[in-house]
Amino acid sequence: MEKSIIRLSKSCIGPAEKQAVQRILDQEYLGMGPEVQKFEAELSVFFNRPAVCVVNGTAALHLSLQACGLGRGDEVLVSSLTYIASFQAISATGATPIACDIHAEDYLIDLNDAERRITTRTKAIMPVHYTGGVGNLDAVYDFAVKHSLRVIEDAAHAFGTIYKNKRVGGFGDIACFSFDGIKNISSGEGGCIVTEDVDILQKVRDARLLGVEKDTENRFSRERSWEFDVKAQGWRYHMSDIMAAIGREQLKRFSAFSEKRQKIAAAYDRIFQDHPIIMPLDRDYNTVVPHIYVVRIIGMENRSDIQKQLLDIGIQVGYHYQPNHQLSYYQSKKLWDFPITEGVHRELLTLPLHFDLTIDDVKTIAFELKRICRDINVDK
Image (cartoon, rainbow, N blue to C red):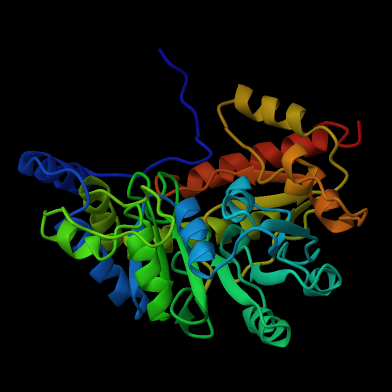
């Protein structure tokens, strides 16, 4: 009999999602069509501003940057503590991601550090909403105004997070979301761009369909453009009706999903409160809808041992993320330090968080982690 594992993350789907996919399969039209149009309309209501769907969150970032005119010779400020997708989306345009350090308090981009990395080539800033938190987003926008930068929010972790009584994505310049299998809602894969910039929206709509101008309207009618023009680089980045069908059902369940995620994260916080070395990340789970739950274990130099011990008893953990400035392709050409990022990274551990997790699971995970941190020498 296979050993039961408390998974770090997982897709949480039910009968409604399966029936929705079957409905699309029965129609025998699987590409981008009316289901994507309906999903976009529902997301636009959710954010109270226009949303355009694409194949994944990385594509959302890439197309947003391209639509802003970013290209070879340009630079984009972005925190090093993020998934590689943020950096790859920037470099895909020909621009250069400029890695920045983070704040020790919230693990979000340090604007003071970012400012010293600005050059005449800096054209945009990409704040990464790590774990679902956004910090002082007003300060990011003030910084952008001061330096005449576009803001492309990497909001992959922050679907549903509230900032000053508005949903992230419901204000500001451009916000990009991910709907991959383990995000706050999923469409299997998928993502979206949210903005009020009409020019950006149209460029993204065309670019997701290989640059074919105004092809979106035909696709929504299950038609295609036979005679067309292309005036800019495009990509095959459109969402399929299968993905949209899953996403629409997940969006209906978002209230339950978000409440459960917030409840789990708050439970972890209470258990680890005042622990001498296990430090939760400061987040207000009344407004933040977390994608992942991370702790910092002060003095930890044996993360792999802790991971193995937990896995041996059926608990899967991980860590997010390896700093991008340490990767061969993105190593900083300037000899600036990243003291906070590197210090935090060494001590990060990501604990299970998903809709199917129970509070009893949370208690078990926390108990075992505390036991291991008590029984072993974290400095070895």
